[in-house]
Image (cartoon, rainbow, N blue to C red; front, top):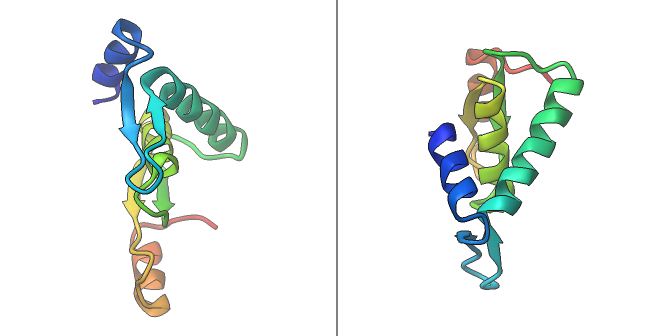
Length: 101
């Protein structure tokens, strides 16, 4: 999936990757790829390694997609967390996937 997106970004970097449903703001493929690379570098520098679980508790947004792509770049496991989930349920999910704090 990541390689396919990279290929699309190389072919048409200025094409829309995402359109914000609330504001109509357009994020291009190149901008999304750059944002995800930046996040991947931040995750790596914070000590995240391949196969680590990365919990994402974000709204459906550019940030969620960028973080998802960043995790793919680092070969991490993405654990999406319901933003409205009960704290006890979130704690169980984090424990089950051994998500580090």
